[in-house]
Image (cartoon, rainbow, N blue to C red; front, side, top):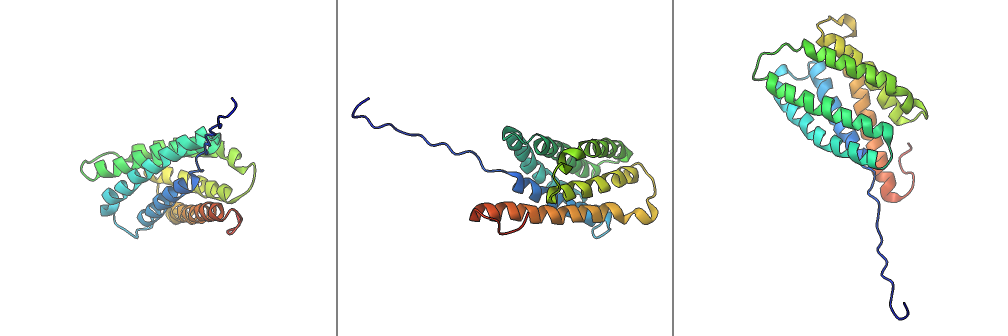
Length: 192
């Protein structure tokens, strides 16, 4: 209509939340490293449980927003990481500090998650990047964790899952920093 100004409403899409999800993954990885390597005693499990439940909140939000943004593989992985790696593990650590439970069931759960990650891995290896190496490190760690929880003695391989998770955590920290800093400057500051 003449004489009337059109009011333009600008909508901005949400930013990619993956960096926050990677930080939650790094915190969990560092906590598991410390526990698996004996850097902290089993008495730390209730506190680790709290940290994991905090990570659940972050990762479930990241998973939903990634799926909304069309990131099928990443969104689904963040959703099941949030549920099983974060919430279930965190709650179990809290419950296990109060009750005596048969934790061998964890081995079966970790075995299922290991198989899922192994079978989903090609979606993350389509293009080799830092995320590919994070997924690879997690894929290395998970079966060892499953067999350890099933009651098998890992012998000389006992440090493998701890160090694989430490590597995943370190790479997740770097990738999250690259996402945040590169986005802030609108150019590549940290190589990805």
